[in-house]
Image (cartoon, rainbow, N blue to C red):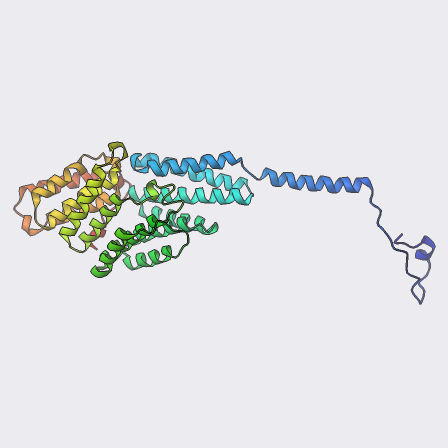
Length: 372
């Protein structure tokens, strides 16, 4: 044993150590080797079981992409249900896999689903939920260090911040979003538009107009895999830029600039096939056009601009539309229109329209962010 005989091992200790034992080589038996092999195989089997089929993640990615691209042509209620299901599927995949590549893909899909849920929660009038879901999307993006997803989420938080009456916080979110890597022109255009709105709420005309110009001139040719490759709700096409800039001009009290931008948005939208035309964007552009005309006291033009909006079904009357209409309603109460039967009738029609809206029933108030 240990290279020594039994007699020496069992004898009393000596003052001097015994001569060095011959080199000892441990003898392994077959059962010990077999046990090691079984333990290794069991561990590998457990690790292999903590994975999902690649096709499952591919389908999840395809479903998120399809929903993002169909967002503006799908009823808000259906978008919410589908996006919620996609988020649950992504979370389930994260619970079932420990494969780094698969976890990255699942986190990305989870973040994208959360971002879509945030957007639809806002449209449905649930501002606190929209904020929470945007933060969730930002955190998922942080886990996998995905710049475009984090930028999109912080851009949404910037938008929601000025909607909550905190435009200075909105500027900070935009600054944070711009710092992420891998952003293409679409992402930077979107952030410039949001920044312009925030400065509009702050009454900073110079900074707001600079942001508007930046949004219109962004053209480095860069793309990213969220805003450009997936696109849809993550994109920010020219019609949406024009519509958003119209709102910025309204915040600055620039009726001419607002009317020009709103009309450009409607022209761009009108050039699209009806099945490809985002109803939320076109409705908001129509209301912005009405607001611009109202600033000039053109009541007939207000009515004509609002006609398309009044035909929108209740479930498509999002919070952004209700906000804009609330601003029109306030404008119609101006003493200049006190004797106008048309203004009174139009105001009552706006109230009835807003009360019937799904977003109103779900708790959206009328914060009049456009008046901040």
